[in-house]
Length: 330
Ligand SMILES: Cc1cc2nc3c(=O)[nH]c(=O)nc-3n(C[C@H](O)[C@H](O)[C@H](O)COP(=O)(O)OP(=O)(O)OC[C@H]3O[C@@H](n4cnc5c(N)ncnc54)[C@H](O)[C@@H]3O)c2cc1C
Image (tube, rainbow, N blue to C red; front, side):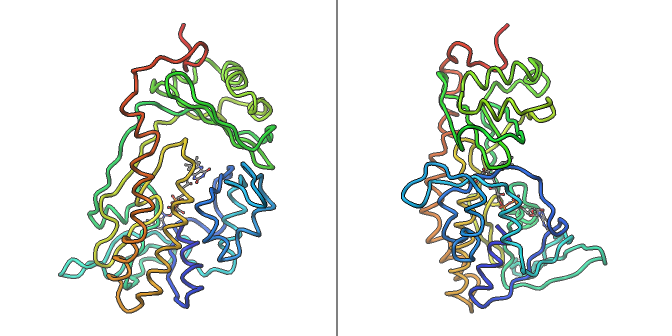
């Protein structure tokens, strides 16, 4: 989000300081489903047209598609090219004036500490945002009652996407991009050891049976190391800004695994905030107020209706269908 926001602000005549703790070009390779919610900001900075041919369309319709699935490095590279970024610098402190207003950050880099004054600090530092924490802004994490089992392989599947619901309301899905595939399903929150205990062959058999469209991709999984167990959490933050600081992207919200919208919504945040800042160049507070006015009606309903959140109400009330439970019953 930070890089995209940087490009959007520069397109509006501003010169933001972008701070990234990772080295330039570093990322964890994986497929990435770019949902339609993220098209406009990427179109504006010329990235959408560049990455579209590198991906596989999901639910194509009349020259566009509901989403495109692409190797994430291609998107990051395209957004980052020619963008000035302070790589290998970590924000370690916020500068806060006596009135409580955030007026800058301290970042630590290879040459030591640097203090950067700022009209507005924009936290785009992910779900476990240190910047949000340092500002004392509330984050509400909701643990899902179910866990997630996922895999990644370097074999593309038959189709770019498929998803199915199971009898107990759980789900199973897969994504495929030109260089590989990934799958995920909800499962009992039993811990990694128990979830992976049935072994790779059993996991592959179950996946191909419940979601035949993912067969080629899951067959390409070579080791149990490519299968991961996690216990996802949803995140919502009641307030998005305080004087001198605003949260966007995953630092502000995180959605459940079956929505596939987290980054599309974050890209939309970046677009809306860039426009709010451009329209209120002389007042960061007015920019933030304007941002929230326009953005809350878009984002809050997605948060409220997250299917993971809805399932918090029904977990355990339904049983899985035959062969659907994971780990399987003895
Ligand atoms: C396995 C996985 C698969 C996903 N697949 C999809 C998908 O298919 N489609 C989708 O829409 N979403 C997907 N998501 C969610 C999506 O990746 C996030 O919504 C998106 O990356 C959020 O972007 P962000 O910039 O807000 O946060 P992040 O991507 O977390 O980026 C935060 C950045 O801040 C940097 N940073 C953190 N702390 C500091 C600090 N103190 N100082 C300086 N820099 C710092 C980090 O290095 C990082 O580069 C997936 C997430 C995961 C984990």
